[in-house]
Every structure is written in C-alpha cells, then in structure tokens.
Image (cartoon, rainbow over all chains, first blue to last red; front, side):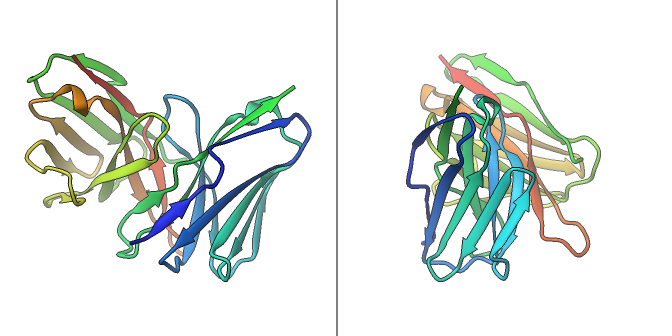
Length: 112
Length: 118
C-alpha cells in the first residue's frame, strides 16, 4: 500500500533562516504532490501543487521540488518568520485517484 | 477562493448519544466531499468519500453504520456519529474537491469539528 513519510516530526529554526521539510513516498508513482499548512485546531490550507513533470515550483517565499526517481519532495521556506510556525503536511492522490492521503506532518517552529 | 465551513466547531456529548456535523461549500458546488479524522499528532485519516446523490464510499475499517454520511445537495454533506463513545473523540475535518478546467484538482478544507465524548 502507499506510504507517505515526513521524516521530521518537528523542526526548530531561527528567524531569517531557510526551513527545509522532507516528504518521501513508497509503492506509488503519483501524478502530482501537494503541500498544506495546518495551524493548531484548524483544517489544512492548500499551499502548492507540483506535477510529476515539474522539477521545481515557487510561490513567494515557498519552493517545492519533486524528484520522482528518489520518490521525494522537498519543501523550502526562505527568510522564515515566526508566523510561518505551523504543521506542514504533504499529500498525494491515492492510487485509485479518488482521495488525498496525507503524511503525519512536520511541525515547524521559527524563533525570533 | 473556495470556502468550506463546518458546524459545530466544537461539541461535547454524553456516551451513547448521536452527533451530527455539517460541512458546507459556501461559494461553490461540490459533487464530492471527504471526511477525515485526526487524532493528536497524527495524520489526517480519510474516513469516507461523500458523493452528492449517491451512497458514500467508506475506507477500510470505518463502520458505515456508525458514521452515517449524507450528501443531499451540492453544497452540504453531513456526518452523524451514532451512539458515540469516548474513543470517537477526535478532530473531524471535511473537505470539498474543486476541479478547474485545465488544472489539477485541489481540496479545500473546513476548519474542523472537535468532538469530545464523555
């Protein structure tokens, strides 16, 4: 069955640094991968989608890469700010193509 | 943008009672909505896919008679937790699928409902 792993449960960095989060998947070749942000007690908010034929996607201070050979996506936040502190989830469409499955998430804490 | 609301945001009930949670798409129509459950520090686990006008599709291990889903209109899906027990206490989140012409689909999530069963 498909597996999604976000290696770090928590990541602590200083304001201004670049945060890099990792998402690995197995037993699957998704057509695209998505990243979401979730704040405590709230539903996830869509951030970025990257397709299998795209190596990199950017949106303001966010950058996502997608390596289908390594079966890995990296999510970068540059010039991080305390307001970026949240849990970040990666998600893939399941093999049936009917619903998203999520990783456990990485909780990012940016200290000033 | 696409907005999804959930009601109530928080509910406390006694063991054995039933609780209904509503999920609404406010500014768009959603033929497909999803219900997820999330335990503390855990991933969102898909419970079921709700299709307007037809029966919901439940994931393996989710009891359809315990978690009743109704998707009676293109903007409303409801999840009823029947005969709730303390182990049903969790964060329930719905989402609606949006597919735009020429683009991949995206899901928009509701703010979640915190259920506590005493």
